[in-house]
Image (cartoon, rainbow, N blue to C red):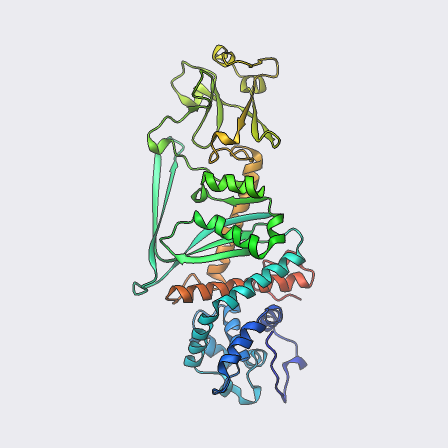
Length: 446
């Protein structure tokens, strides 16, 4: 926290702090803001010093903590709340006269734009401290992108973003939903267990999500090597469905990709079920979302009756293969295609049934260590919902649901400050041994 050297005839320490003020105090105590405050003070040397730099900075942090979307709202609260003025560092003897006018705070925010790297430094400093306090932070990761709308069409740096959602209804028909917005996009990598941000980027809305998966991971590897080594899984929706990235996650980092798979067969006009090995006649097929199935009835027209999903037996790390077992032997189904199944060489069809091993190299987009249709994948993929909850807090607690931010630099600064405050609040809880409350943004760490 920025130190305030001043004398006071009256101190709020003589009475019990309000919970809101205590929450702000905890955040200010945790923030590694000394380099930023020192840089701002160095810029001011030799100039007017009517309002202390540290007090202005603490006031800006207070505005984020308490969800003030506009400077004017923050100024009104400072004039009304003497306890808040005292905690921020304004001279309590001056009363309302100690509160700066709107234009002073606006100019101060403009100066903060020149110190984006120091704000990022605070973010990474808090991530590093959280990683030291929590030995399992970073084991389960999740990534997603969030639309940051700009309300107005006069922002020259904003762009139109488009997301298209396709799927298949229960009756077999397909649907397509298109979402458009004007503004920016927040790419966020979080710890799925504690729901804390680990790395982020803010870009115009028209940039693709896919490149930022590896970009953010590489940033974590560079700045938080110990945290990166802990990573075991990474969950993401099908927007990040890319074979090269899935292969790199597992081959280079041993991070199991829990990334949903797009149906690229139905919408490209190809066959829905394709032979696992097209070079020979066999009964083993795979589908558009990596389902491995056996064609138990070659004369059945309906696909749901012609194919039966093979029983998944697990991932063989030493062979880098997914292991499956004959569905007829595993589930007692009637198989009318045994001749085709027995045609390939080295096939043994005993009481246990045929065993099929699918190498990951068959298709790195479709096949990865956590089989897409296994319980392991389903349970791991549920952790992706954690990033949606973080986005909800960004919107509702820190005011991004309705804002007046214009310009990419301002948006990056404002998002960075919000994530810094989120991390500082969590670290305050962890420091007092209440890790289970690290997600609580509206209460003070006791």
